[in-house]
Amino acid sequence: MKIAILGGAFNPPHLGHLLVAKQILEFTGQQQVWLMPCWQHSFQKKLLPVQHRLKMTGLLENGNIKYSDFEVKNKLSGDTFYTLEALTKKIPNHQFSFVIGSDNLADFKKWGHWENLVQKFQILVFPRHDFDYNLKKYGLENPRYKFYLIKHPLLAKSDISSALIRKRLSAGLSIDYLLPEKVKDYIKKNKLY
Image (cartoon, rainbow, N blue to C red; front, side, top):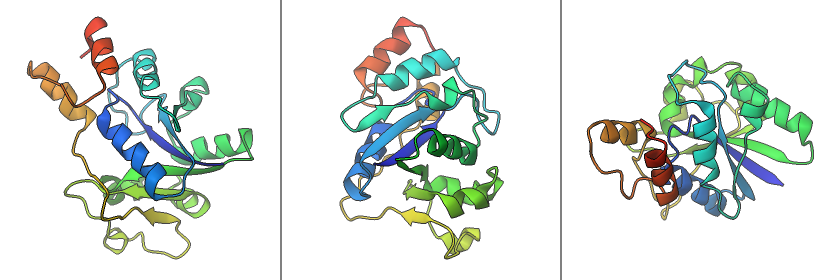
């Protein structure tokens, strides 16, 4: 089975994550997308406690969009290469790829083992507003690199982000239509952010 890993902090998970996951299924030939919260962030971002991020991400499961606690359960470093290596070792009959937004291309060479990652695993690049995906511009154009740039005239992009949601919450603004109601209710019930 072809499985795309959509990793991240999910701090909180939102409709933008679901929009990307759904379109990965529609436009790339992947059979499932696994939403995978990180145990810790590679660039040491301050995160909500992991149990809340896991529970909220689990609320996004829908059909072939699944939730995975693999990185958290195994307390992995957040290094994408090691995560995909560990998944491949544990579940060798699946073919794993990894989803990034085009905003990640500029700093992709700062990722741990980035060259091994992109030579061994397919990297699905989803377009983000105001971030192009000109691989040459970032020194990432190489026939050995397995970047797959997702392009389609019917592709819908969103600028919803977890950071925007957190900022709106701290400003007392509505977060309606930015995340699923179940996630919004969980945030409210647990007085998060």
